[in-house]
Length: 250
Image (cartoon, rainbow, N blue to C red):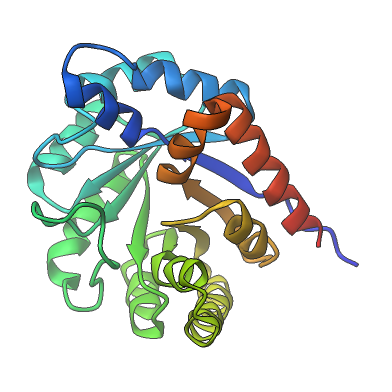
């Protein structure tokens, strides 16, 4: 059986900042959480700087860039303001995501096909600055083709609908969503894109998707921060790392 490269784990620390902001002040510190996650086995840190700064703020991003020892992936809306911040901070990677102020979390993927003319110059600017660009998209052949045409090196497949169906026990919907994800990963890899995945992943779904050889990175946040309430963040990251390794080995 062929051995596939170790699957990378990016830990999203947004909701540590959510807890901090519920009361104000400085605790809990998302930068400390990032350091704990790295010590426990995270390969990188993801943070989403939203336009309304509802959790992560500009100071968090500056400190993360200065104080963590692993790559920083900045999730951001495709706007001039966010591109300017990225060009100043110079994260290792920037993941462009759709964003609406009234949403609780990112709902669905970026419409790369429909917004090509708006997105292309932003992708070009970030790439020219040495920032690896990824596009957060649905498991949709049209979006994959558009991403490849735009020459962004990475896509991140939105796994939320699949995870929701698994959690709800809707086996038919889960099977259909899983097939879309599997086929999209194959199609994207064949087009020369690096394939990441994320949104709604738990220990079980992360172990399952880890078996797809085309997927090289998972970005997981909300679930890990939730599990940290019971087991601590370090243990939650270690448990996730073990689940991913089991899935990759399978």
